[in-house]
Image (cartoon, rainbow, N blue to C red; front, side, top):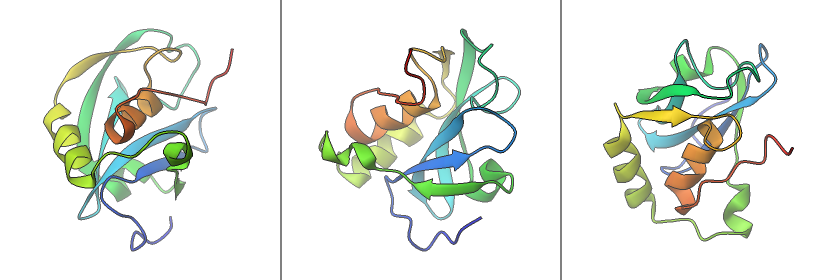
Length: 129
């Protein structure tokens, strides 16, 4: 785990899951907390079998979400899209907490959720088929 002092509100966090083939994504909202989209049973970085299910938006402490895995700030789409104001990102992400959404690894996963919060556009580069 890396120190959180570099994190800014509205940053996207990419978590390198050692126990799954995909990365998990979250939105940093400040005070060592994140908002992220998880499927039943944990997060959405697990198996490709999760083609379609339901998931929930959660607000949790970053250390709980990391589970000891490494992470990095990944705002790489800033080159493609203008990031929204951090206060708006945090406000809208927090308003989503508790919502149950349809999860699909191809069309709406945790990365789609995170990029939608930061840029207003749901996009994922984890899976190119």
